[in-house]
Amino acid sequence: MIFIADSAKEKIEALKAGDSISDQHFIKVSVVSGGCSGLSYKMDFKTELEENDQVFEDKGLKIVTDLKSMLYLFNSTLEFSGGLEGKGFYFQNPNASRTCGCGESFAV
Image 1 (cartoon, rainbow, N blue to C red):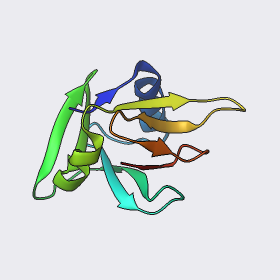
Image 2: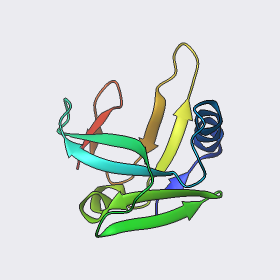
Image 3: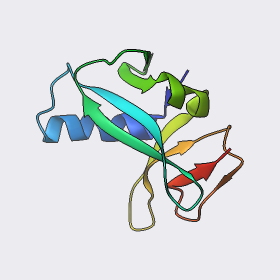
């Protein structure tokens, strides 16, 4: 399961409303190689599922990840922090053994 914090839900709904993104869109999250800790998160709005996508729903929002990324994201929570010191979207990931200073990459 991947969870969505209230802060992330509010920001996602604001983005969808501001950019006229339809209710057919869902959040696609994946883990890719890169960043100073070795792995980075990638997040997009998508409308079509791919083979082996894992679909979850939390707080009325659909969040999708590929099977490989699910191994890294299991039981993670998508968060949002705004303001001058904010990180934007980020994950509270219990599977990460370390993260970089900016919080955009991690290692397991």
